[in-house]
Image (cartoon, rainbow, N blue to C red; front, side, top):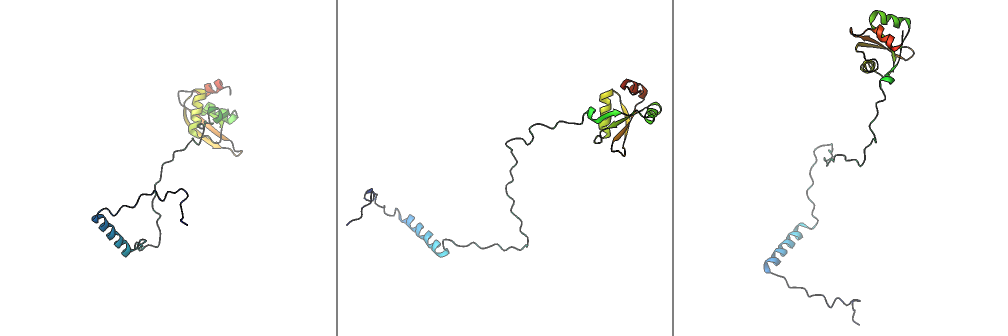
Length: 164
């Protein structure tokens, strides 16, 4: 019995062509000869490492391109002038400062700094500060001594605010 392929395709396959040219066959033979001498999977010589440490090769570092921003909206500055200045101080010593030293005394937020205090006073009362001195009281509240310039009178400003 003769074995027949189920589709019967083996009979329709084209016959192999004979080797094309002598030059092509000679090149192929020399290539095969060199492969036979060296071997197909010949090892390349190992590099001799003279250092005890291994430096990882530098690879490509791409810039980040996020699909969406980390913050949906920019942060709102919570330290506005109303948050910074809590209230003016109306003690006897504060009144003395107003009369003698042209200085207003405020209780301010502990996190605020001198620049923020002077800007807040300027925004709220339309006055210019000459200098600001601060201290944190033992009860943890910050007190600010705001010295006004020669152009402004602390007594008039205190009257306008409603301290006196």
